[in-house]
Amino acid sequence: MGTIRRKYVRCPHCGFTNYSNSEYCYRCNLKVKIDYSSINKSLAFLFTAFIFYIPANIYPILQSNKFLASYTNTIISGIFELWGDGDYPIAIIVFLASVLIPFLKFVILFYLNISVKSCKYLKIKRKLYKFVEISGPWSLLDVFVVFVLGALIHFQYVSIIPQKAALYFLLMVIFTILSSMSFDERLIGEECE
Image (cartoon, rainbow, N blue to C red):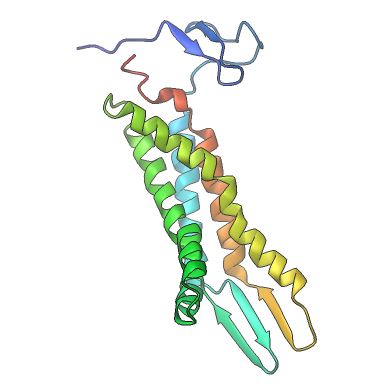
């Protein structure tokens, strides 16, 4: 069974339906051609993000100076410390936002990129893509909190200093967002419709 090509294509900018051989949208005059190279771009950004994910979880993200003592925490050690102190809700939120959700986004984006031509589970794939798209900017919340804490808490005997894992985490989030933005959602099920 051969592949069926679409007769129409939706404009990613205004949503107007155009003929598939149109290069520009009839309504907003922006480019509507489906970008088949977006899979390669998306995977390149995704692998780059994953490379930054590893040092973001290995190196210290914060250094706390309290009186004469200095402590450094990785994301994981910070979660264990919060859990050990009885701050269960905060430990769970940090685990979800800093470890689990970024890893799930890697898995989802990788799955979407490799299964884009499959006609199975189209609705689920579109929902997964929406999840990645919506949760993208919220991933910057962790980095924001680290830098705000570093800026606000500078007393004579107490200070919080962001460490290099914060930069790696920021780069990981940026490249994950770039990966989801470069993926052309219209490719999901392109061969099926």
